[in-house]
Image (cartoon, rainbow, N blue to C red; front, side, top):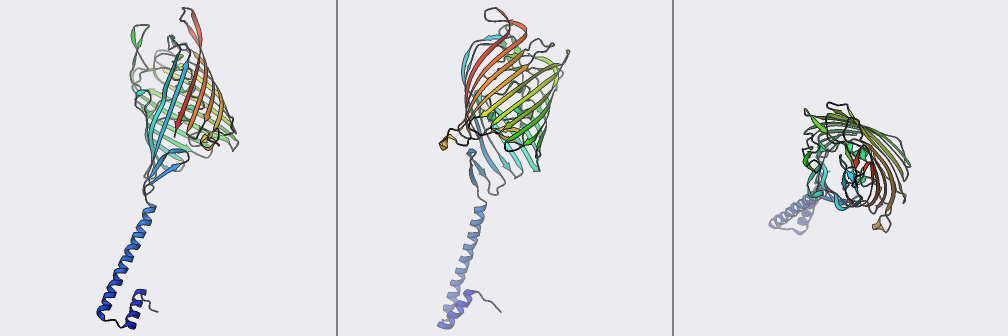
Length: 456
């Protein structure tokens, strides 16, 4: 059976019943044609509006960040803003610092420990990017400038200027540390470098391999008041870095987590004669170094690390040991090491969150934040930290022990307040004269410090 458009049938019926003249019929045909064209135009506009609604620039806000996420029309590219602000107050007792153990009087300090601003996101759906700068200490310091390919299952390849995976503390972000400052094992962690890093993350284990070149160690000089001369700081113009880190979780449930890990780092100084130096502070950035090996000629070094972490609900225990063996020139190899043990307990019942891909912990999120009328999350923590930088082939060095007690208050997902008390002891093979001219082989100092952190 033949079918005719509704408009044509209606027009035919109207002509038959009313006997319109051909001229009138032509006029109505013209009007109906115009109406049909307008209807088609409206339908096209409706389709375009629907498609535009699906492919529009979107601005999103997540619960975990106060900053917006921008999404492109096709959804293949995103842009996120990130920031980390740490404002510190520190009260340091008198101590003897540096390789020659010069006297440093007690002092107080307020400073911006970190002020980092950056952007990150995706492009072309399978690439990630990140750029971050640090504006602390009235300087601009590049922290990250990298792109990451995510086109493989459970694997990533990162290219650019980046931080290299070595150790648990060193890999974990400074925004997610239990104490205000990392333990003395951090002195063995590599600085950021330009290169490539590959990561694999399985169900219960993860691995990272990297290769980089460090150009950041430039020559610096400072005034040596004892010898009335300038002395050179650590200076190795170009260093090749090879790193590896493997982590696993043989136990992982809602209530229990056991994390094990091992790290390796090789530094090769690309120069005929390079210099290395190991030194550590008593768990406070404004405090000076309590132990210092001084510069010594070396071709490179190898660092080895072992780590363990156990979490039972809101109780967290972690420890780490790192040893370094430097290939010294014209003397035996220099061997130094450090380790720490940390325990934390969250009084309000929350627990630290585990990142399977990176093998690190992330800060707890308060169940009842202050903005919701609660008291946030409260955590108490203690840490025992020891560094052994004494070696018979070195002129300087020493051993340092830190006892740290901490109290953390997580007001919101992104807002945290910290309070640390540090008691540090130093012991030395070579004696030194104190401020009263009395010969000493050890010392101790105390530090009180507080921090307010806002990070997203």
